Image (cartoon, rainbow, N blue to C red):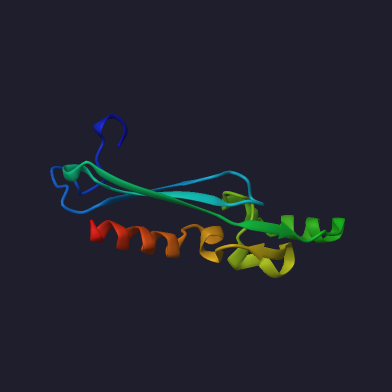
Length: 117
C-alpha cells in the first residue's frame, strides 16, 4: 500500500492476503489487473484479464433515449453491460465478469495458486 497505508481493519495483521484490482478506462476493452499480497512472506501474485466489447451502431434517436435515462452517469465506462447490454452491446469476447467489474475466474485461480505456496 502506498505510503504504508493499511486497508480498513487490517492494521498490525498480515495473516491474510490483501487484494487489489486496477481497471483500464477504455469501455470497449475492459481490462483488470488483480494482485494478492501477503506482506509477512513478501509474496505477491498478479494476473490480468482483458475482454473486448463491440457496441451496436445506434441511431441518433436511440442515443438520445439512452442519454435521457442518466444510467451512464455513475458508470466508469459510461455503460453497464448487466443493465443495458441488449441496447448497446453487439458482442462480447472474453470474461463477462471482467466487464461487469471483477474478473471472478481470474481471482479464484490466483487465490488457489496463492494457497498452494
